[in-house]
Image 1: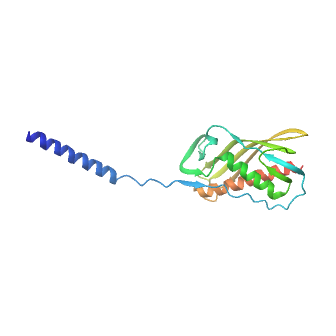
Image 2: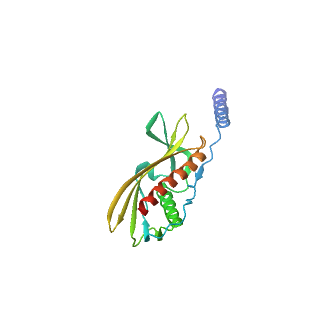
Image 3: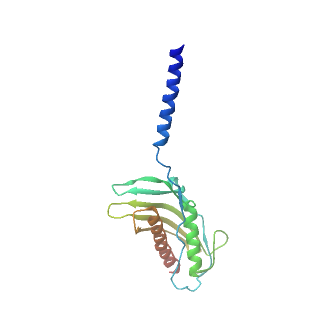
Length: 196
């Protein structure tokens, strides 16, 4: 009876010690970070109004590109995408891209209205093909690839906008700033296409 009692007490003590040691050696849980895409800024001078209205539909994104986690690929394995743990966009990229293009086109004055639905002279349908960080020992960069279908009375034009921008550092915050630069390059290309 005494032997059983000592064995049970011993097991309880050992279990408590293992539990305490396990708790004390755990690293702290990282803080989850959320990021906005930098604001759209068109420093091109206002253009003459070419359209009464442009509609920018909500983009389409399939699979992993429709999630809020910031994606990355290593230069050694460019076809393998991974999610950053604890680093997320404030919204899914479909909303970030639509909001960016809406604001950018409004600032340019290329149309009387730039909106998300309704009648328009031009309707833009966007598919997000790539929206990721590229990690490399030579310096990180970001890649955005959008397929944009521009529909008007003249017909439909499909164009793929593929742009990259270097990040100013190796962290996620620097990559987010580079995403803003990359979106601006695409927006400027789109504006030139709408103006021609």
